[in-house]
Length: 240
Image 1 (tube, rainbow, N blue to C red):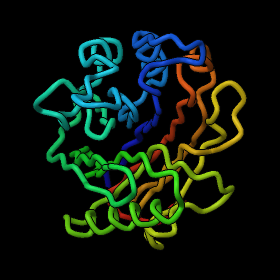
Image 2 (image 1 turned 180 degrees about the horizontal axis):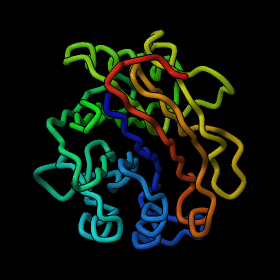
Image 3 (image 1 turned 120 degrees about the vertical axis):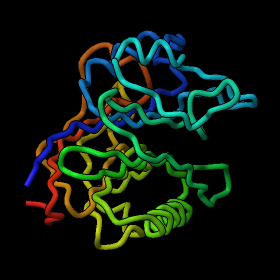
């Protein structure tokens, strides 16, 4: 049985505006590069208003990290979709990408990628959930439904869950997922809330996780990035 270890990371880049109110995409790229992740979910990579131009230039982030930005916005000036994208290690074979529409008072969406690895297929979903608990539950239920319409495979859901609760926040995903909060990540200057989280499905094992606090992450955005080291095996076993 093949076993593969991967580092997943998530970072809300706040449109590349730091706590010093300076918009510095290169600073964000330096932070992402320092994560040394295989797959990164990014939030708020585009400007908020139409035509939603990229706040984080594609060439800059790809050159700095060696990761490929998946084409969730194939046309137009955006880097991502609803401000989100996934960066994937260039030698990983991405077999499918999808955009998931999410319910709520404000427009929200999730981005999905399916990847072939030496240990078998892996699905990663990037999220930026709403501010209101009821809508977060509806959004997670929509993600669960979208996943359920696709082929079964180990799945990780990661991003800005916008949930201040010490526990929980992913009940709508059901018992097939285990939620992990790597640590307090917001606000970056003095973190109080573990808003950035990852939910792991069957076949994915948590090895380690943490919050990246090294400079310039403490000033580059209003969030700190989080990382999760996982083990993927072909057996589909439960967490250790």
